[in-house]
Length: 156
Image (cartoon, rainbow, N blue to C red; front, side):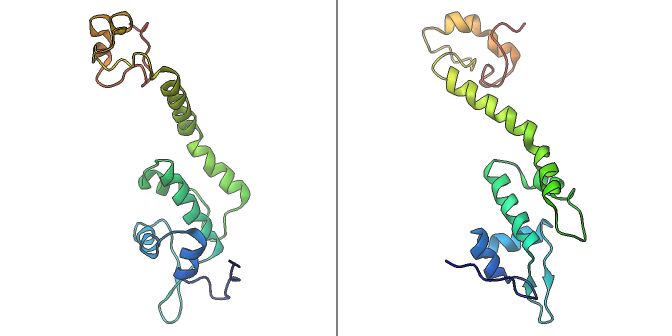
């Protein structure tokens, strides 16, 4: 499907929905939440810029990665006002999520590598739990799957 050129007065909400894959209702919601601020035409219609497309795409990706809107809003608030964000602005913004993403990757790797063994959940249902979690030692570290959450069986 060929993309429409940017209209001199900006993109309509339908154009934005088509380009981002978001529902019109989602775009309105993000506006209500203060994540985007389209301008209004003389007749009151929302008009969006290419920078709004980038913001909405970023929101969609960040949400798909599990980041809450409050965190996304805080990071988007670091973008400059009065001009479209540059590549350097987007690079700087992406670093706000890097540590969280690295931690998630480590958790997923641990899950992949340890799921068939003890996860320190306190269930004591596997035959090997007496070896990994004798007398439910993991429970002293807190509730939940302690070893997958980063605790080690050798931690005091």
